[in-house]
Picture 1 (cartoon, one colour):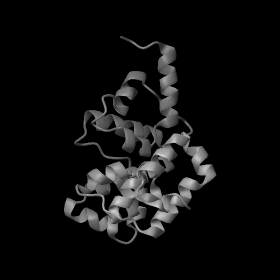
Picture 2 (cartoon, rainbow, N blue to C red; picture 1 turned 45 degrees about the horizontal axis):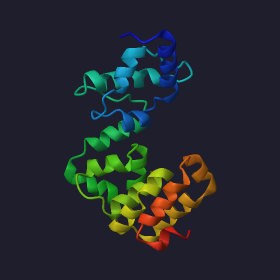
Picture 3 (cartoon, helix red, strand yellow; picture 1 turned 30 degrees about the vertical axis):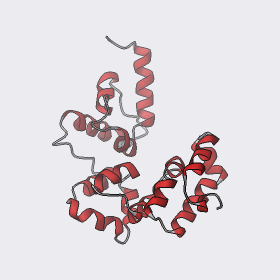
Picture 4 (cartoon, rainbow, N blue to C red; picture 1 turned 90 degrees about the horizontal axis):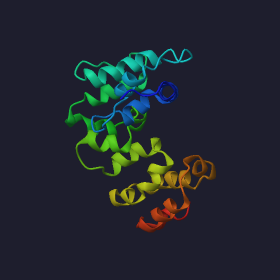
Length: 197
C-alpha cells in the first residue's frame, strides 16, 4: 500500500539528515529486513543541496541494495573507501593491520565498530583488537564491553582511558544512557579498575 505523502516527506527529511557514510556502514547490512536503498526507493528522497556528497552516497546505497557485486563507494567519501580497502584485505593480513602502527587510526577512519571488527578479523577479539578499537568506541559500547575488556586482558593504560571516558559527566550526558546501564556494567565487570577512574 502507498504511503501518505506527508509521511514520505517526513521520512525523506530524516534520510537527508541522518544518512552518512558511517551510518550506511553501521546500519545498512544484509541482515536487516529494510535497507537504506529500500527507503530511498520508497520515499524518493532528493539529496540535501547543502550536502553535495549526498547524491553519490544515495547512489551507492541503491547500488549496495540492488547490485552489491558491482557497487563502488564514492571516491569522495574517505570513510567508505577506507572501509572498502580494509574489507578487501585477505583474512591472513587483517590482524597485522590491527596490531601494526596506526592500526587504531585506520580502523577509526574506516568506521569500524567493535561488532564489525569481530566479524572482519574472523577470529577472537583479543587484547590487541580491543585496544585498537577502544579509542573509537562510543560511551554506550564501552559500558557494555567492560567485562569483555577484562576477559581479553586489555592493558591498564587503555582501561584507564576507557574508564575516564565513561566517568566524564559530559560524555555520560551525551550518551543518554540510563543509570541502570552503568550499575549493570559495574556488577558484571570482574575487575575493580572500572569502579575508580
